[in-house]
Length: 195
Image (cartoon, rainbow, N blue to C red; front, side, top):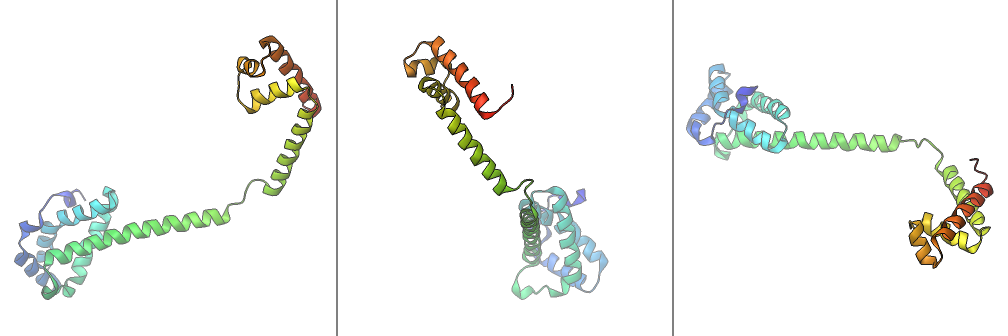
C-alpha cells in the first residue's frame, strides 16, 4: 500500500484528462483505471489520512474509495463538478463515515459495558457497613479524654504532625504523643481491633 502515499497534486493530472479517464473507466477500461489510479491515489490517501490520522486505516479507506471509483464511474456528471472534486469528495465522505462508524462502535461498546456492569459487592450493604463503622468510631472517640480526642482528631482527620498538634493545643510535645498513644490504644480496644 506504500504506493498510495506518493504525493500527487490535484492539478498535476489535469481536469480534462481525469474526466476523460473517468469516462473510459465507466466503460470498464482497466488501462484507464490504472492511469487514473496512478494520478489520484496519492491525493486520495492524503485527504483520508488528514481525517483518520491512522496510516493503516487510511490505506484501507483509500483502497475502498478507489474501488468505489471503479464501480461508480458511470455516476460522475461533468455538469455537477470536476473529476477531481468528485473523487476528493468521495474520499472525504468515506473517511468521515469511518470516523463516525468507529465512534458509534465505541459508544455502543461503552453503553453495553455500563449496562452489563455488575458491582463486585452490594452497594447498599457496603454503605450500611460503612455508616455503622463511622458511627462506632464516633462513639469510641467520645469515650476518649478531651486531649486524647483532640490530638487524635487533629492528627488523623486534620493531617497535622505531632509538633503541629502540640502547637495547636498549646501542650508539650511529649504530652501530646503520650495522649495520642493512649487514645489510639483505647480506640483499638473500643473498636475490637486485634494488635
